Length: 131
Image 1 (tube, rainbow, N blue to C red):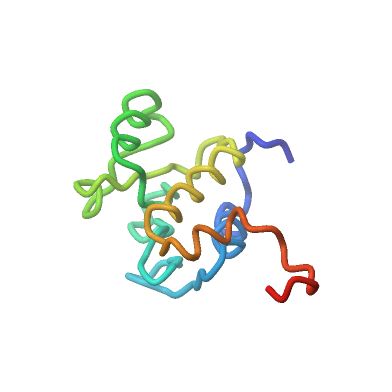
Image 2 (cartoon, rainbow, N blue to C red; image 1 turned 90 degrees about the vertical axis):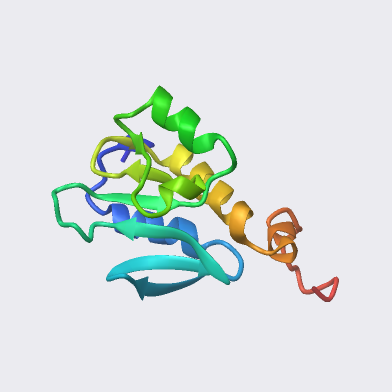
């Protein structure tokens, strides 16, 4: 499968990206898989069952406006949380999963405590340094 693809299992791909991050848990919220790092940072969005599949996520200031303006076919202002700058990302169109990984990582950085964000750049635990 290419990096840009209409994925047959977008939920599985999104789940893998989210759960690979430190301290992330998954729970159902509002009937949808949702990923938390103390607070919600990504939620799957298929609850309207309107033949559209997406996710909503926290986003850095200005990102929602810039991405929606540049690519309204791929990004949108989600209901409820869009006013707080959250980004909606369509998954039922061909997507660049490398770009999705960056968006998920940005969402994580917006919500996660600094101690967990710092672990993203920490060297892996090799068992030698007592980490």
